[in-house]
Amino acid sequence: MKIVFKYLTSILFLLFSFNILAQDFELLKIRSAYYPKQSIEESSVDGEIGFFEWGGQLAIPQTFKKNKKTILIHKVLYANLRADIEGNPANGLVVSNKYYHTISYNLGLVQTLSPKWRLILNLNPTLASDFEESLSEDDLLYQANAMIINTKNTKFQYGFGLAYTTRFGRQIVIPMGMLNYRTAKMNLNIVLPNKLSVLFKKADSKFLYGLEAGLNGGLFNNTNDVQTINTLIDETGYSRFTFGPALSLNLKNGVKIQFNGGVAVGRKLEFIDANEEVFDRTPEVGPFFSMGISFSPKKKNGGEGQSKN
Image (cartoon, rainbow, N blue to C red; front, side, top):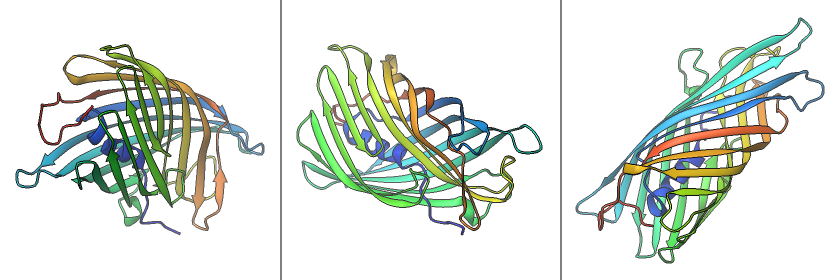
């Protein structure tokens, strides 16, 4: 069964919306991640699978002179997932690379409800597919999420909401929770189930270090053959949970460089045919490495739409 309404990249949009309120606003961001090949967990399948992810995003906030309590955020994003598949079917070794793409536009609303409370809404139409055939309605998916955030003081914020997501490689509705606590020496950032980050720094230091855990995934329209599977695949579900050390270096003029590494656990790669039969090609636990660079405009004192520390 074809799924038209899907959700692919909610972690990016949830974190983006959160950054508008609590951290530096990222106008431009580019990031990549590498997952070396690991053996397939299913013992009946002889092969290995690895992944490479990269993508970028551009975000533009829009404020209104007459309604200073409302901010719109326009954001465009491209993401690429490459699955490096190696299998040993009866006719010999098969090595293939399968590419999945997302092109999306996100419309975000940040609405001030009171001095303490803000509402965040996101709507995101997305094309998610291998793009190996002409575009169809099966390549189009939609996502939506909503959060209520309370600012207790300059150091502490918390929030809760709902998201329509395929973060786990399946289409589901999930609850969300957010907590942010910042001091001169520590940044604690939790967006459940997306991310948990604890970073430490010395006073006035531009270098942060600590631990991060993150969950991400998606559901893609599959239009062409997967060489190591002897049936026509309709959709591909992908998810992974990462955990390990994190480093962040704040350079001049709002430029930030980030490094992450560690292990990728709870990974899933599932190919789904038209009869909804699932072909599991989940790799074993393995290492990963990620790096990114972002640009955050300098904040203006008293300016609307700027983030607060």
